[in-house]
Amino acid sequence: MQIKFGTDGWRGVIARDFTFENISLVAQATMDYLNREGLGNKGVVIGYDRRFLSRDFARRVAEVAAGNGIAVRLTESYAPTPAVSWAVRENGAGAGIMITASHNPPEYNGFKIKEAFGGSALPVTTKIIEEIVAYNQENERRVVAIPYQEALEKGAVVLFDPCEGYFHQLGRYVDLDLIAKAGITAVVDPMYGAGCGFIPRLLPGVAEIHNCENPSFGGIPPEPIGQNLQELSALLKNGNYRVGLALDGDADRIGAVDEHGDFFSSHCIFTVILRHLIENKHLTGAVVKTVSTTRMVDKLAEKYGLELFETPIGFKHICELMLQQDILMGGEESGGLGVKGHIPERDGILLALLLLEAMAVSGKGLRQMLEETMDDIGHFYYQRIDRTIENTAKEQLIARLRSNPPSIIDGKQVVATNFSDGFKFIFENGDWLLIRPSGTEPVLRLYSEAGVPEQVARFLRQAVIIAEG
Image (cartoon, rainbow, N blue to C red; front, side, top):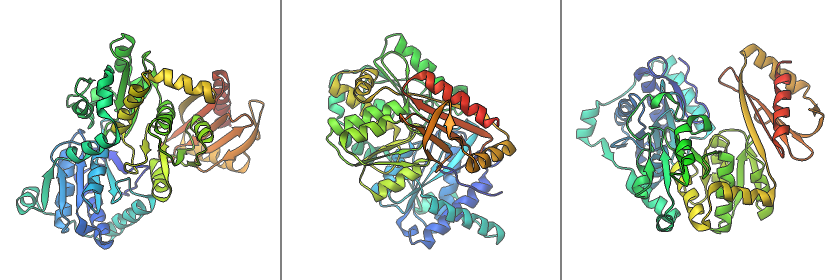
């Protein structure tokens, strides 16, 4: 089969695409790349999440690495992706590999590559590895491996706990004592994923739900979005807690529930934390967001005189800028957020702690902090809808929007466009509409943000009409 890396790694359905044979091919190509680039002698860090067979897949990757003469540090148990990424940088490894399908449904698993800087592999890297996989298949390149137990006995594979160094970094970044003294009643939903137990270990007394081992994730994909957090929301509505925090399957994304029990989206989290970093932690730097992310970030950047960058969707694009520029914070609509002074990586656990720190400093709830910010910069309303679309219709829509994009939508003049990732139409008052056909699925994603919710609904209705031709 053809191996293709998406926005963050290669993913496939277990036993259909994501097989031991295919993961061996990808692992061999990755080790070939590391040895070719002179990175293999620095070793590789390998971690895994709580999905079905993740530990066994990780051990297979370790066998291939050892067979290619690359020393392996393998997590002794499941671990969050950001902990593995931090371990790559902390140990000076040539790369890291995380076996996870992140927020995907339980039938999926995946293979994420982390580069030596502690962030997701850049597009140029994954393209090369894809080419090596194809070359190896065409030339019947043999997968070289050492059996797991033999590799352990020889010391080619060493088990380790990534938590100690990662926890030290989190404690350096966030004032855990301040949070503890604030007495915030918080509950975490790790969605049965690799983030289970981590925040309560750092902050004893924080409650946790959905923390047992459950590879089916309780029948709900481990994605921290509103419809998947109903139980967490109910706990807040009952008045048991002041804040609910949620992590995706490998804990690199964050979601939240506010003091009223309402979902607190990544746009809201980005806004609150950005202001906290500037006003309370006195940090500076540019800001980067993806094309589908809220204008509240733009307004805060303007307010504080910070340079703003906008990228296509995918944290790998944010990561590139974090490596090139002095970036204070970067984030995307899906809940992936990263900050200065850490690693150029999404980290749901760190962002959850920063939310608690912002609450501890201000003495206010999440919604109260957001409302005060919007009173200052303006109120914004956001919605996204997904629609199924056949590939032929999707291709026709793309061709039509490229050749003849609308200049007026819902009676509003389009004053600017951004076609870097989908088709974004911007209006005079800053309201916007994004029509984004998925590159990998028969799905059309429609996004809009405006100053009043009724306008958002009207733009999305017009987007559906445009999509139907």
